[in-house]
Image (cartoon, rainbow, N blue to C red; front, side):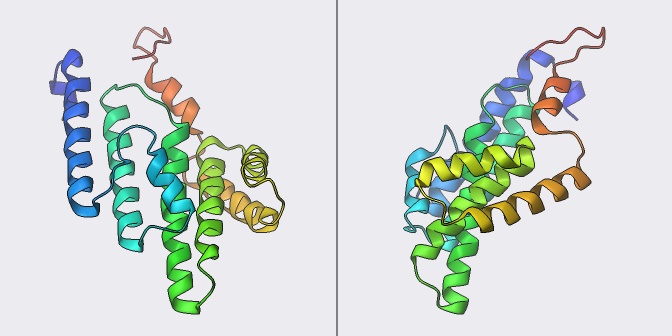
Length: 184
């Protein structure tokens, strides 16, 4: 129980656990990306160069590392982890689609992009912003229908499972017992 641990020690514990998760991911997947933005691995997944195993390992490790970091009071962004997790999950799904149904390898990158958009839409609760970001990234409208369907599905499911968006939940974490809002 973290309530027994002094508040000043919590970020250190979160950092230690995050580091252990990052080393485990490096050993299991032979890739980086769990700490920081993970942009090199993200680019590789968007190009369709990662295996299902690697993407699933990195996705799970990034979720755990982000959760431990934030729950311990550590600071960092939400935008990059959400995009990374969505791309890894979408890319893994696209790789499975490619294997099971024989669709082209380029579909993996499309699934990764749609996964990024859907995860952003569900976490941030901004489905149209997600569409605009992906359209701007790809410089095309080829994915807009699948992206809109995935975004709205993610948005509805996220609102059902947890009505509070991630930024509001993080803000609520910073509310002290005396009602003064603080960031940790």
